[in-house]
Image (cartoon, rainbow, N blue to C red; front, side, top):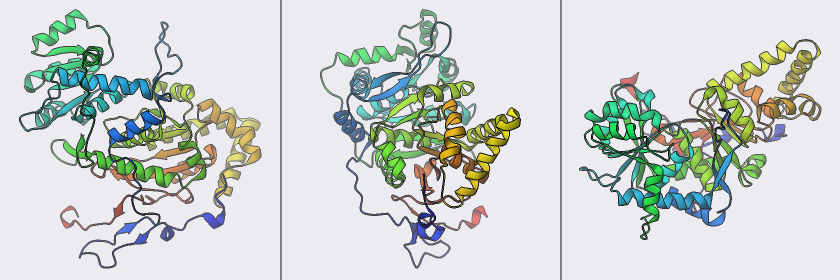
Length: 465
């Protein structure tokens, strides 16, 4: 890909000042030069899914790798958008039939989801939306007491999980009096002894198939509607002090960030071609975090294929190789490890191979300063083979966030992959990214420009130093 020196952006060219007289202590408001009147054609996540199902019912949507008898994962098996839409509607009707998402004493309807990424996470999430409920993601890394705290603050009555999370829920059941149902997403038949233990704890155990089958018998369609200002997810973060804090994420929030990401990333011709084709992505970052949720929102809107990892970091490369994603979203820690493994492996090869790799890398890094990320000879001779070995030979977009990526690592991936590499900056409370780097800006060390859907400013907070 050739950006060209004349197309490279200097930092001031990526934003404009929109507030010449900010309030005392505040910085100027910045907005993206490409910001314009909203062109949103859907306003909620429900509408987004419905639009894609109507347009592309036979496209692959959710994929997983079944485990064979020998314990090895097989090739990806896919459910289409049309198939998933039917399952989501039936699950929503089943949740309503069994009164699993009835309003709490506070008047809120919640469904807890407590498991690693898998197709059933997404099916349960959208089923909750279709049933008029909000999703409460639960995850262990918030701390030992966080699950009980979240269950009690939200008054959740039903949690969808896998067998791996049942023991944790049973241990907390006595401290969460509103919890009534546990729905297992990874089995089709309940183990009698487990059902008895759950019953002894005062809870009822179901399979997701039970709920889906019950819903399939119902003739009345679920509500399947929401307003942009409706909260779709209560996303808990550790915060800086005290108990976890629940950020209220609306349909409009996620939809706006989805729109901003797609609009800005599609300024890159190669990314636009990929995203408006049949894009695929590997889902391995936690769906309990906002970054993965915004990525999913974008892919649902675009009709992309979402393949799930096995949930084992040691097998992540296997999953990438099996899927060959066109978009790779990763945190800096993973990219740093990949950088070390690739460069150390090349050096360990020794002799001509090591010299050739380093020569090719140095040449491409030197050319990067001129906006050039491809090299006809070295890409064909070296980098294309390494990319294919990793499963990243189709990758048109690499995105990273959550922490700064070292400049030398970012530059490496730009020349190694030869595709658009962008950094995103944001937080849970802003529904993820507010800023991302422009594809023409090949310098590292900045948070990039505001997205087309965000106005950004700095505010002085003396109490925090």
